[in-house]
Image (cartoon, rainbow, N blue to C red; front, side):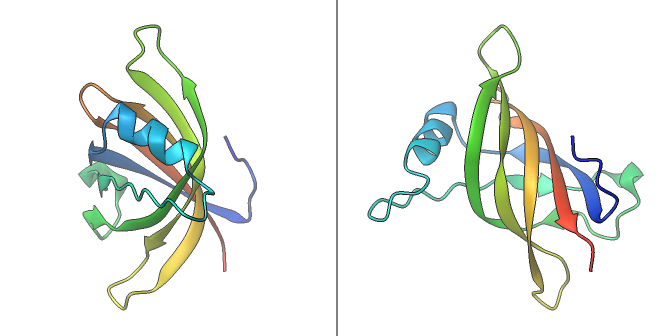
Length: 117
């Protein structure tokens, strides 16, 4: 977990995401100049978070690290970076992320670490 005070931290819910095979393929070809395998998550802020948005648009998702979190093989820890839409005016910011993702239910949580302006 990042504890830097110059970083904004946002925890969001993953409502729907890719299969385990698609995640592993995207990780394998992450920096390939010929093959591009984009992945996406349907992400929402939960109502208790106090954010003034419900749906969050993530793009350019890159996976730097994949690890097994649970013993059943379905729970994965993902780390990497992505771009997310901050406002309705199409202002995008790059950020690091950490996610806990269940490949069986295709749900989880994602924590975005965005540098403060």
